[in-house]
Amino acid sequence: MYTKEELSKILKSMAIALGASDVGIATIETLKGGPKSTELNSALDGAKSAIVFAVPFNQDLIEPFLAKEDFDLNENKIKTTTFAGGISLELAGFLNQMDYNAVPVAPNFIYRKDTPNGIRDRKPIVSHKYLAARAGVGFFGHSGHILTKDNGSAIALSSVVTDAELKATEPISKSENYCDECMLCKAGCIPGYISKAKTKVKIGGFDFEYQNPKSHWRCILVCGGATGLHPSKKYSTWSPGRFDIPQEDIEFEALREKAMPAYVKRPKKDPVFYHPGVPEHKMQYTCSTCQLICHPDKSVRKHRYKLFKNSEVIFEDKLGNRKRVSPDEAEEIIKNMSETQKKLYT
Image (cartoon, rainbow, N blue to C red; front, side):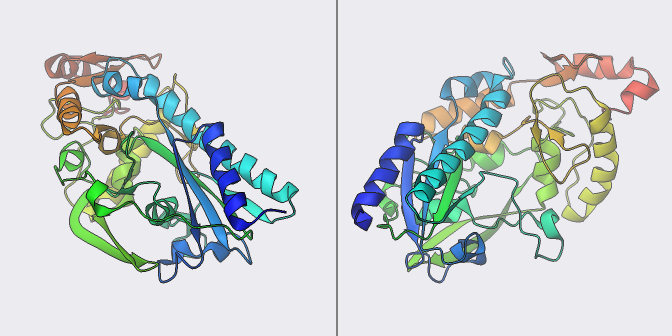
């Protein structure tokens, strides 16, 4: 019915109309030579193309979240990520009705089971980030996040894999990549998830590079809320947990054994998302700092980092209400808790 150029234009327009800010197309040709998570056949036998897009978080909620004035970004991030998956479902349904095979690839928490540790390895079936970088939705920042021209890395990514032949879009030119390795993403990362080592990949003849992450448990335990106090004890994430964050990856197993049982017993008054790899599965976005600090304007990045560093710490009462308090107030509150209550946080 349509040429691949015409169908591609329709699908890109549809993604934008449904709420995406940036959209691109990758094909089996443009993904050649890439890592295993760029193999579209992993998601759909006979796949030829993938539509990949970004949906932005509400920028107005980022600074109040970093300053610990308002926790609403947690809910916005949950709903935006879910919404991005809904756009994938709509696009796949559209293609299916046109007699193409198409599958939506959820934005998150869909992991391979054929790796040594199964879903604990957190290896995606198809990497939205690799597809987004190759298709020009954004570019890799120092953090490993995809940065977009207007919204930085404050986005959710999602994809649709299809056997329809589509017209590929090209990567963003290096001259447009505003990541200057200011390191504010790393400076704001309380668990030290971003390492010094770099990953370099070649996808369809283009070279891409970003920092290697350390143990995924660093991100899971802090971003998910089990703990979040900076080693200085002067500021924290939105987590009220005060378990010490180890220096070495190998020590995170012991932290997980202590922090997660306490975490699941704490009240979760605000909206949650569900993760297959943690007890009781309910989690919240209490950090995301490396993702939220980054912005096209460096002065905004610096301002956001300063807000976060001066945001003090979080206290949680027995009903799950959280509020910002000074480090000294928090120490006094913890000291006066019963031993049973104290074990939920320290």
